[in-house]
Length: 384
Length: 162
Image (cartoon, rainbow over all chains, first blue to last red; front, side, top):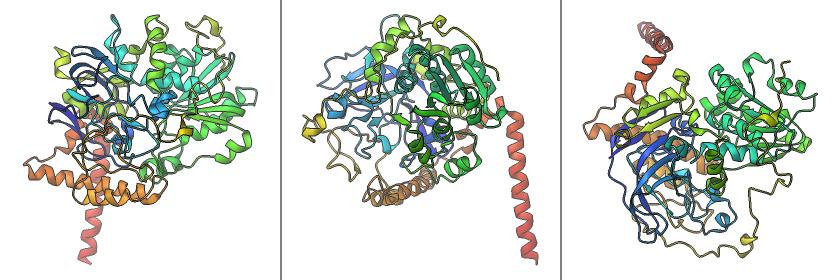
């Protein structure tokens, strides 16, 4: 089968790989019909996540048709068209039982800090991902969900990560009616977080980024205020000035390790890989939020230490809330929102690229070429 | 300062998920105090361990399922085995893993050559897309590299001549 093959930082290609097999009675084998490149894939692509091994297939946002099931799989049947949340969750461990499906304790032997994630290095379990024609899906009865009749596949594939992550970013913000919410980052997750902030009753939503086309998209889609930080002398001072000098009620870091805007953070976190990423957005979020406010983090960082102004967290009495999205917990509500037309995920998709051109897809997305917001890879069989 | 005035309640879906009880412990976790019972849940059947699986020393064993994509191999594998002697809290864990990742890039090239495949680094880096969408940027980058390499060669040649 065709599958994306990681060869080292900034190098990926399409290759023929063996078909995946059922390795556990709760596995399913799925024929992929849509597979996105995610902003967090870029951390792997850039070589900043430890234990990203050459030969691995990335991809944690995908839909597909069930082709085979293990003997303990009861809910899914062959031929079901499913969306597959990016978390691999057993459903039985103490963390899954508490709704923390992103923190499953039975899916990632290599690290205890995070549960298993498809195609996300051995730090997240060593699973091959969905940027392929076929993929093995463990615990198939737990998180994978049959796509509701009539739902567009492009909407479904964004329900595997982008929509729940954006929604949880807003949810973790503890937004109260009338709150001012600042979202750092106008990538797909940041735009979705801004859109979802309104669902929690925000009174004002501001997005900060530096790419004009994304800021314009956010203004129209969320809809919200959106500013280029390069045109602001200091984004933190700007937020203070526009909130009566108090700071925002809620700040969301929707960027993570690849943040631009600080030469020191970029050098240490992205060029020298001496910390778990460039924490510029998080730095701004902590310093822009009001005293006693909430900082919600969904931007992904590497597991090593990262410089953040922790003294200000203490002195301002900030609550930090962060996690990988618990997709299974959120799916029923988010499916409702899509079906009721409250959220329109597929509008984020700007590029449909054949799986065979995966190298170009990564380049276009990582270099922000051709006004790319969200690329979707289309395997050959899904194009016929 | 531009402040876009609008009535948020006119935005589709405004307030449908508002919850005044959303405090820092809810809704991320539906507390059931299960942790108090320790590692006591009924574990799923163990996936047969048919490849080498390194596991964090912060847990007692391998999880019930795991990925089998790229087992540790060669020199990078040796480094990864060393890394897993240390906890996730230690640089002794992460630094050897980062080094192993770089070593495995070289191993990957050697493996390609061994199988008669010369990696097309330009294609792997997506330069076709760069050429299509950012011709000037690509040309500038190539030019800078050519200038830097030429300068380095010229400098080294002059040193040798001395």
